[in-house]
Each structure stands twice: as structure tokens, then as C-alpha cells.
Amino acid sequence: PQNVANVLQSFQNLLNKIRLNGNAELNRTDLLLNACSPVLQVLRLKTNKIKHLNEHMFDLCSNLTEIDLGDNEISNIPPGMFRGFTQLKTLRLQINKFTRITNFFQNLFTLEFIDLSRNSIKTLNCDVFANLTQLKMLYLYSNKISIIESCSFKDLKSLEVLRLGTNNLLRIGDAFRNGPQSLLELQLSFNKLSKIEKYTFRNMSQLKYLHLQDNQISEIESYAFGGLKNLSSLFLSSNKISAKTLTKHQDVFSGMPNLENLGLDANIILFTDDQLKFPPFKDLKHLTVLSLHSQRRGIGQIPSNLLQGLSSLEMFYVGNTNLAHLNPDTFKFSPQLWFLDLSKNALSEDHSIPAELFHPISRLTKLLISRTQLRSLNFLLNANLSRLSTLKATGNEIDLINKTLIQSLPRLEVLDLQKNTFTCDCDNEFFIDWAKNSNSTQVVYLNKYMCSYPSSLRGMSLSAFNTESCTLNIDFICFLCSSIVVFLTLLSSFVWHFLRFQVVYAYYLFLAFLYDNKKKQSGSTFQYDAFISYNAQDEPWVMEELIPKLEGEQSWRLCLHHRDFEP
Image (tube, rainbow, N blue to C red; front, side, top):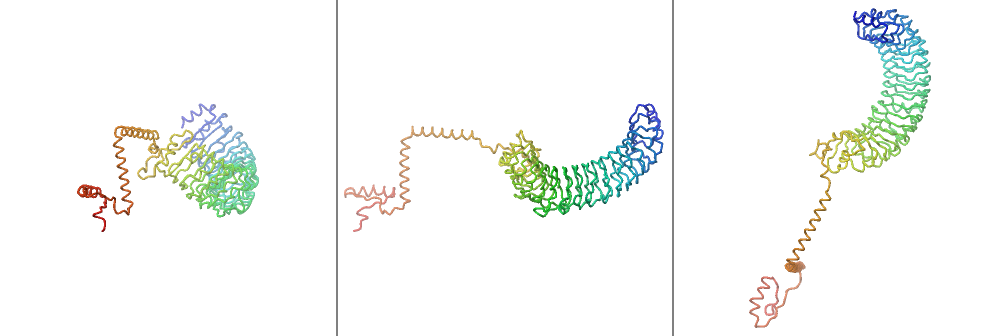
């Protein structure tokens, strides 16, 4: 400890920043006597188990611009402790044991940032932040605040960021009736809010970011966000917002003409009608990002006019909502859409995603359809997505990618088809060769694509399938055919030149055979084949030589006058 004090004393007039975090055993009073000087600007005393503060312990550090007393055991600050601080801009008191705040900030007119997060503060009174007109950032998250007076922030004319998340707020009421009018970001997430009342934020016209996620909001009155003319992002995820919440009134989201980002994911929005009487987003002409991701009971369906009014919509998240089909008119109101997330749905039927769905959104460049039980990507054939650059369809049941499908996506740059059930046969020949050799499209993790069919190739890498076995060698076939023709020509010439008489004889024998066979098959009605006429002198030769030859060997039927004529 003495060494630390000596070092500080040696450099007392040179140091403008001192960090003494985690030095609970040191004598802090002696250290401050040696450390403080007119040139010191930043003093950090985090994690030192400090319980009590002396009113005069920082008297020699009056030129400080930043003090960090976070992660200690402080529960109170003596009045007047910061009386002489005329340049202090940052005061960090997070992770202490404050249960209430008195007006110990009242003389710190130059303060720009106060961190009181992760304490046990329960209420905010009217004089807590009195006269802090230069304050820009105020952190009060992770406390136990349940009540905020309407006058608590009345003097915070320059406040830009207010974080009140993770408290016990049941309702907002008039907490922001007096502003702060210059506020740009308000965080109210992780509270217990159940209702947003009409014109709750009307005096915050400069607000750009409003965080209301992780509450219990189930009701939003008409013009609840009225007056937020500069709001660009509204986060309402993880609440109890239902389809009734959005459609009960006509003007739920009115009063935010410049809203660009709306988060409604992880609610209980379930639509049962094909068309809505009051489309909830009709006044959000400048909205570019809409998230309806992960509705806890499933979204049921997307009404055909749900996106009515969203003429500037560019990004739409509707994954993990148990969608089974999409209406062809879903995107007719959002022609600027370029990003669409349909992941983790149940789009297994052939008609679940009609090609006409994409006709109004020809600007689409990124499509996410992973884990949707798809068996085919054929719906893209007539989708007219000539600008699509990224297609992610992992974890489906796709087995075949044909040439026509690839040609229908001329600007495809990234294709991710991991964890599909590919068939390793010649039907996928084009896709395999294209995936390995394409210079314009990156097929992500191609080496991880595995064969599912046939069973003999299951588990083999798709890229390892030999596509050469699918290709007919035309040159070889032509060579073989021409060789056979030449050989037969030579053989015919040889036979005709040397054996032509035998060939002619064989030809006539063949004709005779055919004639004889034809005669036998025709079943002729003639009784005899020939009549033999002879004189008496030749009868022995006829009977002994001719008849045995013709009737015996040739099976002819002969008619003899002395044998076959009836008297």
C-alpha cells in the first residue's frame, strides 16, 4: 500500500487518469491525498467494498470530469459532497445499495451522464434530478422502481437517452407528461406494463427509439403513440399482443408518420380471417422493417390486406409462426420488399407457396426458407425472381435441383441447401457439376451435402458422386458405328467376290424353302401334287425308282392311273 501511495505522490501532477479498481485493502483517504491534483480528470474506484463516503474525501479532486464508484456497497451520498465540482460530466454509481435518491445531484450542473443501474431504487421524486439541464444520458435500469412522478424529469432539458428497463413499472401514467422533450431513446423493457394508454408519449416529439419489449402489454389504445412524429424504431416483442390488440381500433399505430422499424415478434398474434376490417399498419407509409417472428401460438395465416399501407416495406420477418400456406395477394401492397424470412414454418404442401406470391415483389434479393418442410423449390420456376442473390433453404426435404430452376435465378450469388435429402443419381448431374464449378454462385458448405437416396449411397457426400457415369460418349458411339459399317462393307465385298455362286445357290434354296413353308402353312385343298403319266414299258422304273424318291424322300403325293383312279 505504501508503494502505491509513493508512486501516486511521485506522479501527482502528471496523471490525468487514475484507476484504483479492486483495491479494497488500501487506505483510500491516504491514496486520494496523494492522487488528487488539479490535472486529474478521471478517477475510478470500482469494486473496493466502499460503504461510506466522507463529505470531504474528494475536496482535492475538484477538477474531475469522471468519477466511477460502481460495484461497491454505497447506500447514501453525504449532502454537499460534490459541491465544488464544476467540471464533472460522468458519475457512475451502478451496482451499489441505493434504495432512494436524494437531491445530492443538485449542484452538479455540468453532469452529462449518470449511471444508477443495478441498485434497489423504488421511487423517483420530483427533485431527484433538479437543475441537471446538461444531462444527456441517465441509466436507471435493473432497479425496483414502481412509481415515477410526472415531475421527475421536468428539468432534464438535454436528456437524450433514458434507460428504465428491468424495473417494477405497472403503468406509465403521466410519467412523461413533461417530457423530457429532447429524448431520443427510451428503454422500458422488462417491466410489468399491461396497457399503453392514449397519448402516453405525446411530449416526446424528438424520440427515435422506444423499447417496450418483454412486458405484459395486451392492450394498446388508439393513438397510444400519438405525438411521436420522429420515432423510427418501436420494439414491442415478447408481450401479450394479440390479433385483437392490433385490429380492435383503427388507429393503434397512428401518430408515427416516420416509423421505419416495428418489432412485434414473440407475441400471441393469431389471425383467423382472410381479410381484416381494420388493417393495423395502414398509416405506416415509411415502415421498412416489420417483424412478426415466433408468435407463440402460431400466426394462423397472413390476411391478404395485413400489409396494406406498407408501400415502403423492405424487410419482413415471419418465421417460426406455423404458417401452412400463403395468400397470393399477401405482398401486393409492398412492392419494395427485398428481404423475406419464412423459416421454420410448415409449408410442405405443393400449393403452400404459390409462384404468384412473388410477382409483386420482383425486387426480392434475399429469401430465407429454412426448416419449412419443403420437398421442392419448383415454386421458384415461375416466380420471376430475377434479382434474387441469396437463397437459404437448409433443413428441408429437397432431393432434386434441376437445370431449369438454376437458370430461373440468373443473379444468384449465395445458395445454402445444407441438411436436405438429396438423391445421388443422374437426375442431379447438372446441379452437382454446377455447384462445384460455378464462378458466380457460392454454394455454402457443398462438402456437407449428403446423399439420402439410394440407400446404397446414403451418407456419401453429394459432391463425391461420379457424374461422368451419366454422360453418353457420343464420339465413341460414332466411332463404333462407323467401324461396324466399314467392317460389314468389306465382308460383303469379300463374300460376293469369292463366293457369289454359292450365295446365289443359297438364295434360291432359301426362296424354295420359303415357298414350301408357305404352301404348308396355307393349308392347300389339293389332294395330289402331281399326276404321273407313263407307258407300260416304263412302269417298272416308275414303281421302283421314281415313286420311292418323290413320295418317300420328298413327301410328294402322286396320282397314278392304275392305283388311284376309281373304275
